[in-house]
Length: 58
Image (cartoon, rainbow, N blue to C red; front, side):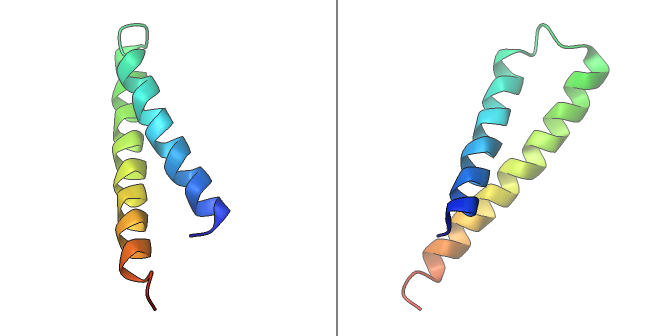
């Protein structure tokens, strides 16, 4: 797994955590779009984790 992939995975999960922690202070429209973006990025990060695990032995 390259360092860029690791950095992306960490930043995606950190963004999701920040959206959860700061949901009370964000405007409703901003909160909705940030949540959608966070879900997409976390899903892609999870895909990268699974893909790198499956191709680990190859």
